[in-house]
Image 1 (cartoon, helix red, strand yellow):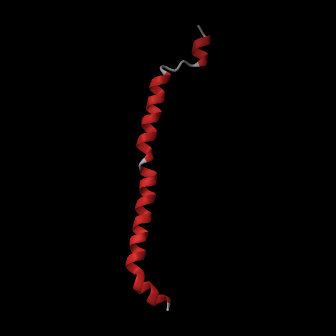
Image 2 (tube, rainbow, N blue to C red):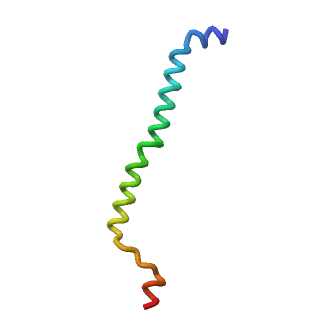
Image 3 (cartoon, helix red, strand yellow):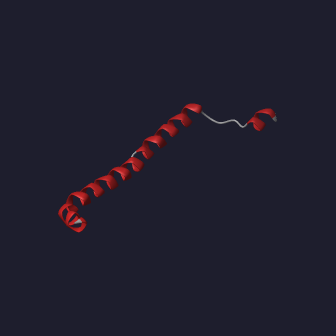
Length: 58
């Protein structure tokens, strides 16, 4: 009974598995470039970093 169900629906189940795999891959891969560009933009806005000990040693 279970084997007949699997044989009947293997294409739809395979397509759903491929779709979920693609979505999970894109969910991880797409945010990375935008997160790095936001980080770079914040670093540019912050300007040069002065360490506390460098500022007080003079």
